[in-house]
Image (cartoon, rainbow, N blue to C red; front, side, top):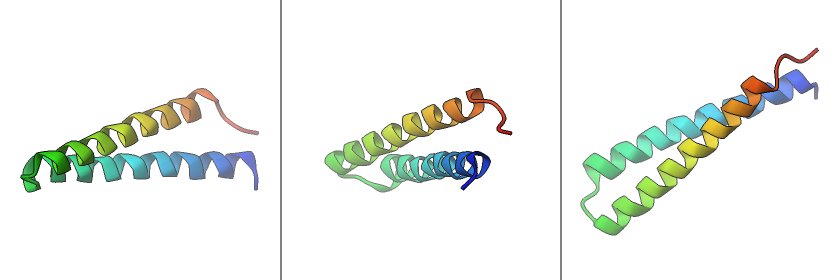
Length: 66
């Protein structure tokens, strides 16, 4: 697999993590009433958002591939 294709899949995973975190934050804030469940889903969502930000940051800063 070429480095360009590998970077594409890694950045796609980062975008998927962002999408999952948006859904989890929505569920945490508006759908769940149990405080423990709210805390668990929110912490997972924020962890995924931070992870996706780091992934996209490194993909962008690594520059173009040949």
